[in-house]
Length: 484
Image (cartoon, rainbow, N blue to C red):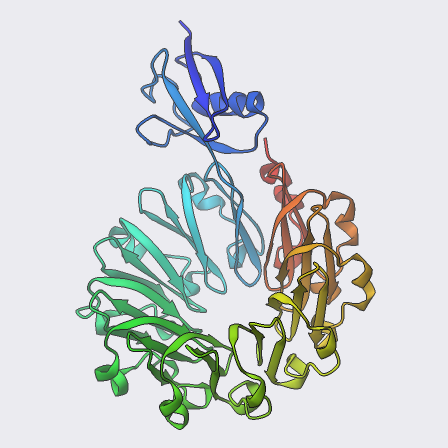
């Protein structure tokens, strides 16, 4: 005997369907999606419970006259160095490219349901499910095997990753780690201290956890921030932590800053400590930090040639609103819409060639060695290393009405208001999208791996380009990535 059920979108649109008790729920979902002309989603009961698509209607406790909700979610992308993982609208996961880096999740594919979040080390992935469980895959030496701590990976709220290890915060504030011990995968030495953790920050080789009382616990490579014993007494009432490649900087509640890690990379800030008062925000290159103070001035420290010194532009750093960082240079946007840069000249630290064009700047994006700024009229100005996207002259006429820019390590992709995408920079890193030009229509969002891009279209489908070994070729999983 068939049942009549109603399936609604959050917007209020709804459809009435006939369903059989022995029909799979994913079939009901597909029919609802088609009837409502929407992309992938997941079915929820009125209680908010997510229905398992592999269950029958009868097993899901669905009764005649019940109302279900079809929850739509955009595709989310996460990338390791040589692999990409996409969370689809129904909470399932698709991966592609190098299997050794997490590009093949076939061994645990059936476990990847109702995925909420994915994090990646260089060669592995970790997914948090909606019930707080965690599923991992990829290179075992980089965190792809969590079997040793699987019993502890329950009720997980957040995951952070170094190059080769993961750290997860559970809802009771305890922390579970796995992966390379050298990169923070072993927190046994500080386990007794890791209670009531609120947030975790990571650099390439170490973790720093802010506890509920505002204190900090660190672990991982000692010289690169894993050992904070020298400043432990000062790490009180910590509000946020920023990481460079090999060091950390913490902002305290009184606006002062405490640093630790590799001294040359900003782990020591004694030379500017007296200036670090009323700090509002900190950004970092790989080897330097820059802090915006409450009065809009900027203080920098670390390796001078990589952004640790503002002496060349000190008179210009006033009323700064935000800072963006490339690998070895900073770009600051002032309240008047002008831009000030410093650091490695070949990495975007020298803007003399484009300075007169950088007016009314709204936002800045950075690749590894270049910057791209969106102006108030929707045009774009880029500078820095030309092979990394610092020269956009070849596509300048197309860069109009730009709303968003994303960057791989050596290329940029800009989304215009008409849903068209413009790319430039290294062709091998996604700077050349001519092969998929005809498909890039009605683009809603673009994400980047190290050398490739992924575009999410309005119908929920996905288009990829760039280095095929870094996620630029998704043809092997095209059917799975196509919105139903």
